[in-house]
Length: 231
Image 1: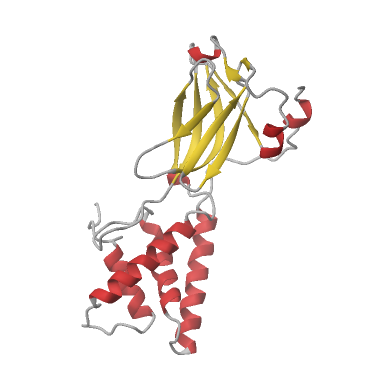
Image 2: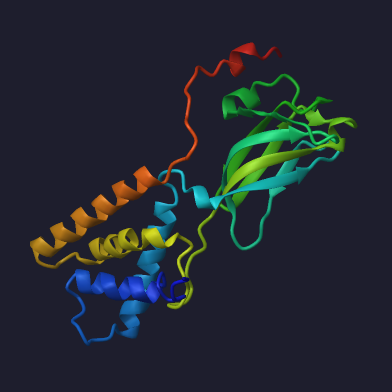
C-alpha cells in the first residue's frame, strides 16, 4: 500500500526537526518565518547530502548522438543538471557496445591532436558550476558518427520550493534529513539537545551510506588503461 504523499514532505521534516531541537512544542505551529528559513536550510542539507556516497537512484543513462567532426558536447537536461559522469560506452550502429576510457585534465591536455578524427575511445568531462561539457577523443569521424555514446550520469537532486514538495530522496532517508536539520537548527539550545541531534544525524547518515551500495559484487584491479595508450 502506498504511503501518503506528504510522508516525505518538507513540512513534515521541518516539524519533526523543530520538535527534536526543542524549538516547537506539541500543539504549536511553525511560524511562516521559521518554515521559510528552515526550508532553505533543508535545501542546503539536500545539496550536500547528494555528494556523499553513491546515491544510486540519481543515476541514469544518457544517450549522446554523435556528429561528424564534433568533439564537444554540452550536456543540457532542463531544470536539473548532470553533476557527474560515472562511465561511458560507445554503441555502434549494430547496437554493440564497448567501454570508453575516462580522461583526466592532465591526460586530455597532453593529447597531441585533440581535433583528430577517428573511432571514439575516451572522454573528458569539464565540470562547471552550471553543468557539464563532454569532450570525446578521438573526434567522431564518419564511421563513428553512425553510433552513439551512452553515458552513465548522476543527476542533481531537485531543491524544494514548497512545503508540500516531496523530497527527491527515497523515504528511508527521512530520519536522516529530519535529524540533520534538527542538528543544524539546534545551535543555542541546551547541550544535551545539541549532542542528541548531532549523534542521531551521524548515526542515520552512516546507516544510509552503508545501505546505498551496488547489489552486485565489486572487484578491484589495477587500472592500466593509461599505460597502454599510445599517442
